[in-house]
Image 1 (cartoon, rainbow, N blue to C red):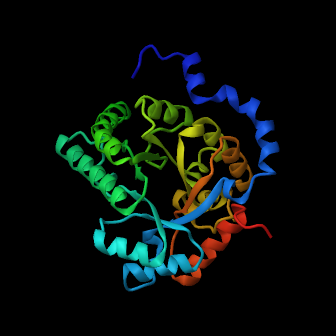
Image 2: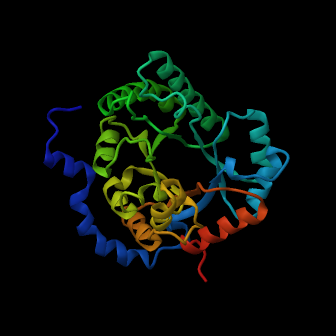
Amino acid sequence: MNDNWNRRDFLKETGLALVAASAVASAEVRAAEPAANRPIAKKALKLSMVKSGNSLLEKFQLVKAVGFDGIDMDGPPQNHEEVLKARDESGLFIHGVVDNAHWSQPLSHPDPKVREAGLNGLLTAIRDAKAYGGDTVLLVPAVVNKEMSYADAYTRSQAEIRKALPLAKELGIKIAIENVWNMFLLSPLEMARYIDEFETPLIGSYFDVGNIVTYGWPEQWIQVLGKRIMKVDIKEYSRKKRDSEGPGAGFKVPIGEGDCDWPAVLKALSDIGYSGWGTAEVSGGDRERLQDIADRMDRYLEMKRA
């Protein structure tokens, strides 16, 4: 970390001083924005959510048919030829790839061999994203637990990610860091600093709205992260279900029926100038279930006006 970092520099970098000044002007502009410039302009889902279809092509065709614009490839690596065939024949856009190794082989692990395997997983995801025509890889940068300290997670993960930057630059793929329940980067100020220390536009945030709700407010994180946000994951969270059934149960509510303040989230995204992908990351299912998710995204993310 930079010992010369001071409060003035940090506030300047995070853009906090601009939030209040820009809020009124942004709100006035938003009412006149064309559809293409709405905060969530294109909707997608994760491949693992699609539970119907015998082939990848059939899955892609189903996703397209129920109203999604694209897909984020998660799960085990796929056969490139099959993926490209499904993409081209369905017309479904592949906007990114989720790193497949970041939980099982975290970049914060004390064993160098595990970190090396995690780095190789990240490099594979970067190559896959390029092959599919996407522009981001979603990365959980580190895991903190009893055996992996917070300080070590910070330095180790940054060191490993820097090793992936030459390939990311060569292929034009961005590494988007997701906020998850990994006991790491627990405030938006810290996440902003972590990203900025790479000193490259190739590193940014894959902001997950629902993951924040149990310990914060998504719109506040959005204001701080600002232009660092590259993509947005869409999920819901209920504090009531969390309190009565446990933390994981908070996700077991449909989009629009939990504690995510979607109007505030959309306003915050608009204020920072975001207009791009919103990717559902919720429990999936068959055609009926996917249609309901698409319809809820249209409704609560204001993608279609009544």
